[in-house]
Length: 389
Ligand SMILES: Nc1nc2c(c(=O)[nH]1)N[C@H]1C(S)=C(S)[C@@H](COP(=O)(O)O)O[C@H]1N2
Ligand SMILES: [Mo]
Image (cartoon, rainbow, N blue to C red; front, side, top):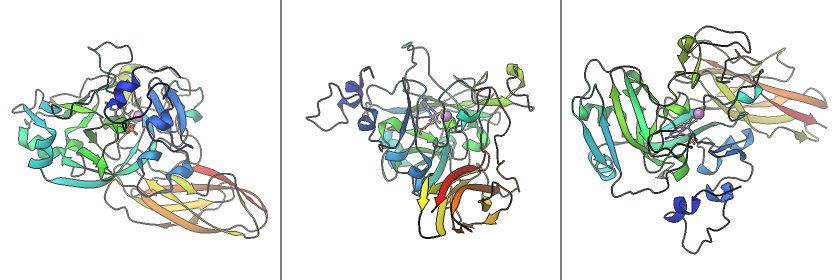
């Protein structure tokens, strides 16, 4: 892998005495678990595997990385500012990190962040972009200011419809006038209790690659709405029109289309709340069970803005389904733990399938759902293989 100034990125953050020359190992750079899978190095993209996501609170070492551009080279904490402006802002204000930490009540929530493209690798015809399998999802504990408190501090005009974010990362082309991504959420989502401008993750500073020192966190929505390295939020009187808000980016056909269809921009709709989904995080696929036909399996389930109301598993390819125990989430928009003791009737090869159902009665499809040009929203049942010997 070739370098591009990572010494500067880590100059301030690495312990003294490190030899930066030659440190291009992203596992070391980003302090990631060795079982994480690197998908791209420019920009950096890395996903977890299902078995890495067994913790209820995702540790930084097992959190997927999704970058659209280049990580900021220098973080100037003293002078870091969050500007809130826009056509629908009554005033314009700037906040230092100290202002945010000292002048506003802190809130902490566990928030599920899933990349809209998680599961993309299964689509056919294939979609361009990172070939995520199942590991572009996390649920960490985020602490910060409620976005609504900042919006109320600035004042929101009655014609406000959207919030757009801007971050400090730079465009792959190196063109400083371009942003790699500038997305956001409708004002109604911005005003929700759990939408945070976060300065901590899991009780510590947010890791650089996940948005240090400040990040928007809008749980339950495609994680592309949660802007990293946050410096500016615009209160818009129309749907935000920043980078990757149009075309096929984070949008799907408003009406179902045949696989491979060409879809006009005007027929594409922005992804909002993510669909119901689940993972089997224990055991790891391929496990061999010897001398015992009982096995406790467990994982997580989530459903965007909705709670999950039921969790089931099948060991006969979906012919019959059985209930799992499902816990309540710590808070709204956090994933929910489930577990069950599975009894395998005889020795042999099995697939375990897991299926969640949201509070409105909608379940995960057992196989790939509707094709779309960029391969978003694959919430098919997760499956693992087990050999009982
Ligand atoms: N500034 C900025 N924010 C960003 C991105 C980015 O490239 N730049 N990527 C988005 C996308 S597409 C996803 S899926 C999440 C990934 O967050 P993570 O890398 O912390 O897991 O960040 C979102 N926020
Ligand atoms: Mo994403």
